[in-house]
Amino acid sequence: MRYSQTLIPTVKEVPAEAEIPSHQLMIRAGFIRKVASGTYTYLPLGNRSLLKIIAIVREEMNRAGAQEILMPVLQPMELWEATGRREDYGETLAWFEDRHGRENVLAPTAEEVVTSLVAAEINSYRQLPVNLYQINTKVRDEFRPRFGVLRSREFIMKDAYSFHANVDDLEKTYRAMYDAYCRIFSRCGLKYVAVEADSGPIGGSASHEFMVPCSAGEDVIVHAEDFSYAANLEKAEIDAPAASPQLAAARQAAPAMEEVHTPGVGSIEAVCNFLKNRPADMIKTLVYTSGKDVIVALLRGDHEANENKLRRACDGAALEMAPPEVIKNVTSAAVGFAGPQGLAGKITRLIVDNSVAAMTSGVTGANKTDYHVRNVVPGRDFPLSGANVVVADIRNAVDGDTRGGKALKFSRGIEVGHVFKLGTKYSQKLSANFLDEQGQKQPCIMGCYGIGINRILASAIEMGHDDNGCVLPIAIAPFEVLVVPINISNPEVMGAAERIYKDLQAGGADVLLDDRDARPGVKFKDADLLGIPLRIVVGEKSLKEGKVELKARTEAKPTLVDLGAAVARTLDLAAQLKSQLSGESR
Ligand code: ATP
Ligand code: MG
Image (cartoon, rainbow, N blue to C red; front, side, top):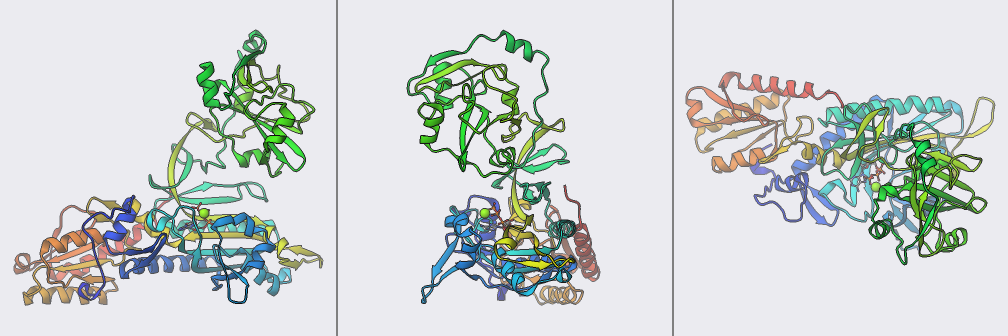
């Protein structure tokens, strides 16, 4: 491709609306232009990169045995009502009413559509497993579109859905997809971590998120220093505090509970200010409901409840924060003054976080409006055992926590992909059943597997850039080689550059020829900004000596090479760079 004939509108200034490097550079290098909040046009360079990513994804999906299909972006709302997700998706679901009064969803994902396809077309275990994928536009009315294409309202997703007759078979496909994801991200040149995510309906770790660790990421990765363990915050497991030999004695020595008047002081922070204690000295009493059941969870004042872990401690029951009238009913006090003492008989279950169970004593609400109590001793003033008492890990990990004895670290990451064992949630609701070997009707067991195509490009730039521009991995850079003649009006220079350009193309390289009549400074600046991995400069002076300059984007200085050897050398380097991209994950 010739630069002069390609739309590459590079920009010198850092765009004011772009907060993070990848967003700034995608605009500055002429990869994208914003159309409206969260929607972008990909210009030729950005589009070339996307197409390269798509080609890698497609190749690896096919290799893993998935079959490509293409589903519509418009989906009937009835399907979303059948699965209850019209409500679950909430305002993120974009939809419109058509001229006939029918409601249409703009696909944010496609479980409903693909499951209804399988419900109609598959009826025997003999037709299973099947793994269907598409690469298509998704629309989500994100609350806060930002960071350019990292969180946009319209993006391209590769979404795959697998259907199985049994859990073992799902496990095999899940593993195959997991491995395919590793290959995809390695081939795209990303450094990534596969983190354990939600435990789903099938047990074990039902899901993994593929994260690119970087400061712009919106997700938190909780991990051991060496990444031998990595999980998201929802899932990260924490060691229970080691039993302290002094604990029992300290509790024995603790004074009796003492009520203190704390008028209008309800929040942890306010109580701490008022009583001059630390949040870690407080026992936070959270009241939940699950149908008719009332569940009380106890956490240290400086810890946050983890909804997933709480749900597990309640045998999977969905919990909701109790409304004020329930709290008043159970505690006989206004909201903000609940405590665990004396609740037996009024609640269905008490769940005590491991860290609370390790406290000598704490400050908590007195179950009396405007009062708190000091010296509340676990095991003495509220139970730590019994039929309705569970002591468990129900909080988010914090600094200082360990897992398997290893200190947990916190890093930010960008989620580029997600593999998930769904179970029968969708197949049951949409009747995607099959007859098993015994002729019994069973719902298909499903897995789903998503990749954000645009996010791969943005995170590659987030990872790979310097002060001068993008530093792109060769597999997804818009071009592999940039040929830069200096002074195009010199026929010898231009002739040599054209020959190199054509020979590189003949050798299979993807080449951009900067045939613009522009100053060398302008060409060099743009070359750095675009981030094309290899650059050949054809200058008058070196050409007189039969040489051209060859430089990798990652190197500071060019190497002079013989004109006659330049093409072979460049193709060789390109091949080397590509072979490095089968690289290791962390
Ligand atoms: P997030 O937590 O970042 O919103 P998600 O859990 O909603 O992601 P999935 O529904 O699993 O994402 O979608 C699969 C993939 O699609 C994600 O791993 C991500 O790479 C991509 N993706 C999701 N939302 C967006 C978005 N708003 N913009 C760009 N890519 C997205
Ligand atoms: Mg989301």
